[in-house]
Length: 212
Image (tube, rainbow, N blue to C red; front, side, top):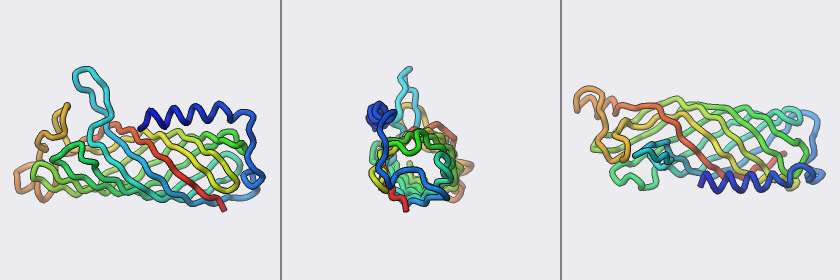
């Protein structure tokens, strides 16, 4: 998914230099607010036998977000996304809620297509059931992202490609079907959760946003 999003994003930006947005999408004075919805998926970095993939602990989900544009280039965003595992690991079930805040900069303000850069982060509230061990944890996340929007009046259709630092259950590389590494005794594992480690994850999203 991430590769196809990047190809679409680059192709659209070939037309960004000379194209201009509709009148309603021109730069306005004062802050401009927007709301939107998005769908996407992510996977964790994994190196197996010298081959890099992003298929570890694959997750899909949807989210809602709000934006405020301050001036022609800078904007802030608050969001909430709900993600779930997609069955690539048969013995693991994971559900995560990701509230986040971000700041960013839009390039080519007032054009038909506006690329943007973002940095942000927030907590991850996650429940993982795997290997007979149920875990509920609150973890920290952080991300950097690049994306772009196609502006049609007050509607904005776009994509995001983000690189996260996120928590994942400690397991043997090559398969997440390995047993969890429990913290302490078996009883403690069920009450305190499994051992976690931080890893890099890649996320791709499609979204639509409406500006007021």
